[in-house]
Length: 336
Ligand code: GDP
Image 1 (tube, rainbow, N blue to C red):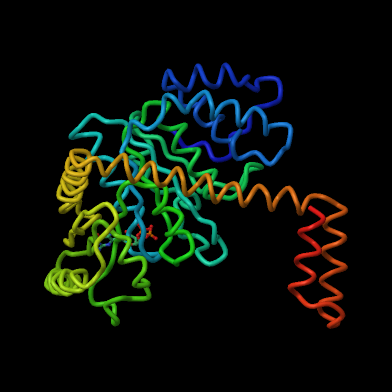
Image 2 (tube, rainbow, N blue to C red):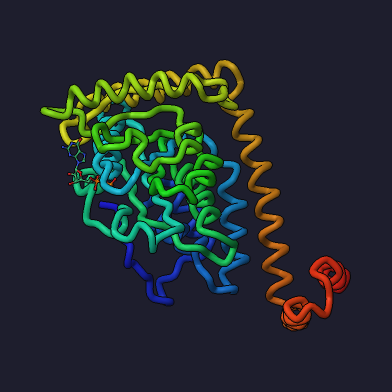
């Protein structure tokens, strides 16, 4: 049992970074939970410890396949993740961690795994670790907290990382930049075949699985799969040079879940052989460096009282037409 969303150690039993790190690398679930709590902490006094811990974990990280799973609320993401997680543990013996990213929690209220008492079977499995939706820590952004959580899970020996995200658009690009494989779940026969999933998200997918493909819905699902297969031919080639796969599944009946895993495994073998796997990860690291630097510079500027005041003053002047927006920006930046 690994869900402990509300777990808060009392100050007395708070572990040191060294203790957390040592426990975590031994696969201790409590240490891993505390590690994630530390990097999500908004307290500035935790900041240095969080960085220390991430630095310690980095050399022990990377040895996993990171899989993003997306789709609209109700498509069956949690059910699918539970079935896939169970299958992976059973067939490979690998340890599986499940994380969720939900930066748009207002839009998707109730749809992400943290809000539900789901995945009960998987969470009871001692080879599984489930961590509900991340919150933004002092190190910036929900995406960062999730990304660093991936590293911590890897250092704790989890070899498969499943990241659930809601298919509403915002979080996908960021998740795509932190995973090796991106899987999109869709439904057949829901009116518009593209059901609000933006084309950009489909273009990011390494695999599209049409879920709930059973009973009366089977024929429609097969038809939808054919349509998606021809649609993806028109997409530009993917950076990792992988040709996306389209198939059907039934998460609730655990049907074709083995197929999904074998597609992921094929992807892993082929991108590893071609060197693409590590190339894409290297590019992702570069992306996060650039993005985080921008983010932290911004944070630094806008937590400076003097600069904040100047920014407000200039904003008013710009509004009143007393100074041009460009001139105001130049003046502001010259004061940094
Ligand atoms: P999420 O919001 O995308 O995480 O979707 P859930 O996993 O919570 O599933 C939404 C609903 O669809 C639940 O009632 C599930 O039991 C149901 N569901 C999930 N997968 C399947 C499936 O393969 N077939 C059918 N018939 N129902 C499913």
